[in-house]
Length: 405
Image 1 (cartoon, one colour):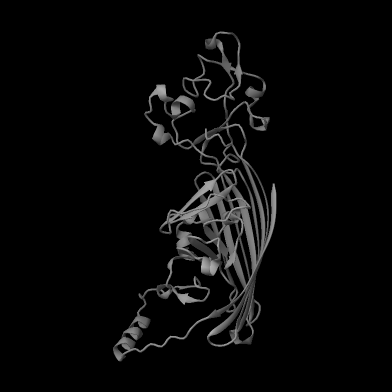
Image 2 (tube, one colour):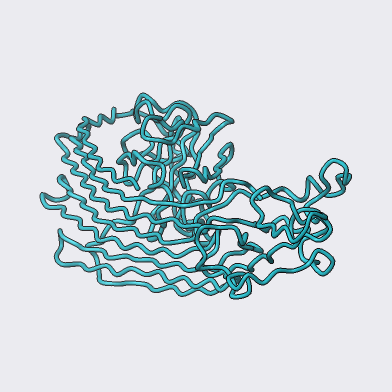
C-alpha cells in the first residue's frame, strides 16, 4: 500500500505581446461574411502556451478534444484517448496499476516514485505527479489538450516528449442549469454522470459534477485451484473433488500445463494422475472489471469586472475494481505445432484471446483527493499574474497475477 501527498506550487507572469496587422477592405468584408455564416468553423481556444490563444494560431503540435468529441468516443479516462491523438500510445503496467504513456515512440517505463514520465499529465494546468492519477474518471470536461514534442520549457522535465492537460468545465455566472446522463451497455455496464451549475451572483458561481461506472469483466476467467485465497473456489474443489485424466475435457490434452497445478498423485503411473478442476470466475469482480466513482465541486469568483478570477476545485476519486492482467496473444500462437507448445487450446480452456487462468484474485484500490486553485490577475492589458497551487493525496493498494496465463 502506498500513500503519497504532493503539493504543487507555481507562480508565473504571462505576457501576451500585442500584434499589429493590417487588413484590406476585401479582407474585412470576407471576415464579416464568415461571422454571418452559420456553417463557419468553430473557433477553439487553448492554453498550451500558458495563455489563451486560438488553436489555429498556436505554434505547437497540439490536438484539442472538445467535450462533445469525448462523449461521442465514450472516453472514461486518459487511456481512452490513445486512438484520438496522433502519435499517442497508452499501455498499462500491471505491476504498478498505472498507464504508461508514449508519444512519438518515446516513453518512460519507470513509473515508480523514483522515475519521471516522458509525457506529463496536468489537471487544470496543475501537474499530477503519480501516473495512477491519470486513471481518474473524466467527466464534465471542457476539453483535453495533447501537446506533442518537448514541452520542458513550459511544463518541466516530466514532459520530455509531450504533455496532456485535462481542463474541467468552469462554473458559469449566467444561469442555473444542469444535466444527467444514464448509460447501459454490454458486460452489464452501468454509468451515471451529471452536473449542476449554481449562479450565486454576478461574480460568484458553484458547479457540482459526479460520475459513477460499473462494468463486469469481458474476460473468460478461471481460478487455478492451487491459490492461497480459497474464497473464490467452487465447493467441488474445496471438497477435494477431482477429475480423472480420461474425463477431463475442459483444458485440452495436457493436464500439467503449469508448475503450480494441484496434482494428486494417485499412483506412480502418470496416466492415473488426477487434477482438480478450474473454477470459473465471477465476471462482476474478475480482472478488467470496473467499479469506480468520482465527484467534483468547483467555485469561480471574478470581481473587479473580470480582471481578477479565482478558480478552486475539490475532487474525490475512488476505484475498487478487479485490476488488469496480462493476456496471452492467442492470435499469434494459433497454428503453432504441438512440439513447440501448441496454441492456446493446448494449455488454456479454449482458443480465446480474451481469457485468463489466475491463482491471485485481482484487486485495485485507489483513493485520490485533489485540491487545485488557480488565481489570475490582469495587471495590464498585456501582463497577467498567475498563481497555481495543487494538493494531491493518494492511497493505493493492488493485487495481480503476473504469470500471463
